[in-house]
Amino acid sequence: MAKAQPSKRPFPTIWIIIPTLFVAAGFTAQALGIDPARLQDLSRLPAYFQDYKNPDFTDLPKYAALMLETVIMGLWGSVINLALALPLTRYAAQNVTPNRFAFRASREFLNFCRAMPDILLALVFTVGFGPGPFAGALALGIHSTGFLGKTFAESIERLPKANSEGLQACGASPWQTLRFSLWPSISRELVGYTAYIVYRNILVATTLGLVGAGGIGVELTQAFGFFQKGKVAAILVLIIVIVASIDLAADQIRKKIS
Amino acid sequence: MKFVTPTGRPQTVSLVAGTLFLATLLLTFPVLKADFSRLEAFVFMTQGFLQEPAWDYLPTLIKLCGETLGMAFVATLIAVTFATPLALLAARNTTPTTALGSLTKTVFSLIRAVPDMIWAAMLAGAVGIGVLPGVLALIISSTAFLVKVFSESLEVVDPKPIEGVLAHGASPLAVRTVAIVPQAAPDMLGLSLYMFDVNVRCATILGLVGAGGIGYDLTTATKLQYWDRLFLIILAIFLMVTLIDRLSTYLRGRLVN
Image (cartoon, rainbow over all chains, first blue to last red; front, side):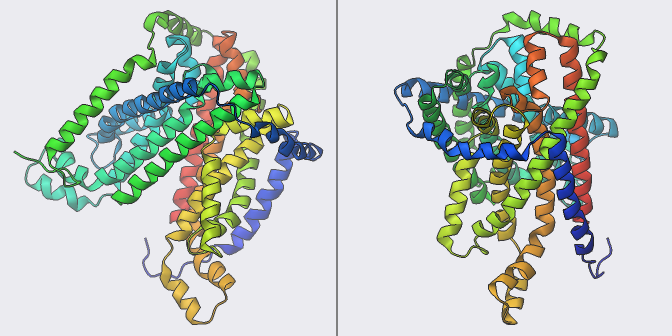
């Protein structure tokens, strides 16, 4: 990279790209059949959401139990993520991978995991493992591994080479280099990413019930189906409280370690 | 040999914590209700995948993939348009008043707590099934995400240019447009590209609740056990998501340099 070159201002191209994007979006919306007239339907939204104003908490103990199931599903998903991602990182980081083949294979596997939406995986797993939280945990366990493994590998790749060369010069094995040079420098970052993944898994776990993969989503889908808006509202309140507090906790963990 | 963990706590503490965590996990395993008796169905399904794909379904598939991409594109652009001023309202160093800043942040963190699928399901109930509720749901959830990450990247800009323009007597508006936003802009563009990538992924499944895209056919193919069709759909989603992912990674890489 050139050092002291004055940066070229990107503005001229940007001012062409932005209007083009908006025009393209207009045409896309037309092609999608989004009728501008239908946007008037949006005026119905306030009235529609009015019905959600009175949450019906009569079944709260049941919801709480299902929410616990959801959280456990998310945690198990995260444990599978760690169990798969941690060993894979050794092969998926360019600077510590033993050979090019292992690098490509592990990267492609991680890409595959990331590319498969969790709900799709959950749908497929409910065929094999029956409806229930196990299919959900497995789906989360595969999908989020993609994100976790990739970010883990990238944080190892960002490390300066000198860190590990010192140890290698003393005759350390690759695993020893990983344990004593790379691990201490990235462990904080990894805890941050893991906290995010736990939060994300629990958030997504609330919706996996849509395809019958257990948790509070099953109850929510049922309430939706029967237009029991009071029950839907109660479940949503519960989801928001739990998910928002886990989001806060994850943020706190990230702030504390950085 | 006695190791000290990076947090500075002795290893015994982390050992005990680890054991407790493992014990809790194992005790909660029954909650998952794992059932391996239906694995035959799984094998049957994968055999269905290996049959000749349903080629006659291909034109519909391509059309639905286009619809999915279009939804993600429109929604991301609108979400970025909404989120930029809102992030300026929320970020600590650009907000007019601190109270307004934290109010904006709280409101959007609550919106973020409702998963996009649930937004889509509710909106499909409100405005009728189709592409519109899907696009709206994507707009809502990605605006909420972008407000958070945009305001975070505004907050970490270098304060020196701000002091510089302030010393020249710049107005509050000028400080934001000249010293703060240009510093965060590459980051925000990169995040917008990432958001597009996420929205494509999400748009593939919105159809499960009747909110447009390829998701509806995905559910019907699974329910009616059209395994040959399901295989094509999964393959198409994989290719589409991977392609967009590579493209957005490439463009983000170009932005950094």
